[in-house]
Amino acid sequence: MYERPVSGLEAKTKSRSRVIVLSVNGETHEVMVRPRHRLIDVIRDQLNLTGTKDGCQSGTCGACTVLLNGRPVLACLTLAVDCDGKEVRTIEGLAENGQLNKVQEAFLDQGAIQCGFCTPGMVMSATALLDDNPKPSRHQIDKALEGNLCRCTGYNAIVDAVLQASGQGGVKPVMK
Image (cartoon, rainbow, N blue to C red; front, side):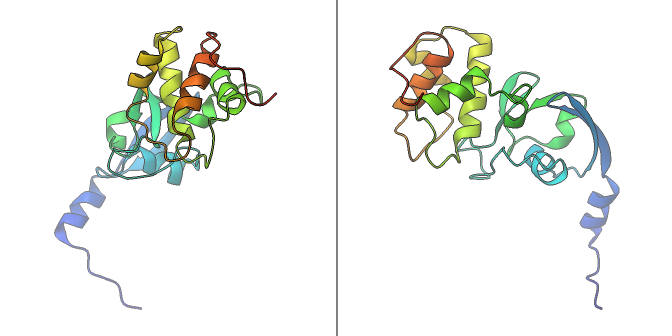
């Protein structure tokens, strides 16, 4: 079988692989990464947490949003090596004891989930907003979600879901 020769740059990159430690959804993981590995690569390919979506791979859609030390980041633009020793929270880490959290419940209630591809990133951005500002205005919700694109819902249901999760009502839930 033919083996492709390893280039000098590729050999250097392989030799720079190192172990990093991440706390992901409350569990500590030691993972081997190369300098070019993105956080989303580790989350999806090494930890098998596939709720975080790899949409545009360029930081424009927000589908890959996760919380890094409580702040929303785009996992497709975040290098894994920069996350060593940090806490990562993904969509899988929101539910507790098999129960969806208030943001996830509100998204279901308000019909804010259509195809579902953008939903994990939207939910994570909304969670970060509500952690910082438990009673945001519609304008503040719009600002917090402006980095998340949805092609299905038209955003009204999403904003209503965040309002519901904040306890401010919004529209009557669609489903119950």
